Image 1 (cartoon, rainbow, N blue to C red):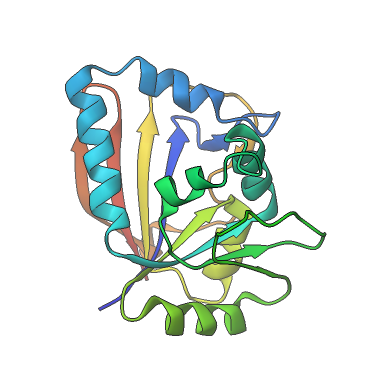
Image 2: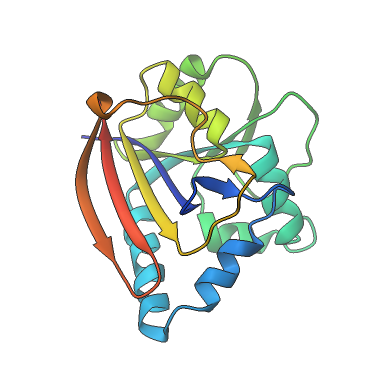
Length: 191
């Protein structure tokens, strides 16, 4: 059965981006991994992404990826990362589209968009890429099935929280726990 998943990296203290909305801390942590851990990390992402049929992304995340990867100048990089998976960008402002990417810019309630995403996913999973508030909106509607967290060996002290909602232990069940020499990987089912 298809799932709606939040697959993300987080700092030990629960942030997905630093106080400048940067992910440089994550790339530094990944750079410190051994070659075998780096290959395992890439394989973990590829295995996850092979089951994804649609994606949702918040405006801040989209803008960061757009700028960091220079996607307007090099739109083929979007295909390298996300292939031809249809993506919904949640925003309240005008954002540039990446040439050749299957993007829909939307705003408002996540439920009707979720229905569109489910239809487009064709039985595959939906990935809520981020940010945390967007994931929170899906959670508020009871639409999030799973949290998959790659916990990096870093603390940030401030920044964009992993999920700015309270989820009690009664709503979360740990279903998998794994590690490599750098990251811990935790998977929780959301009830």
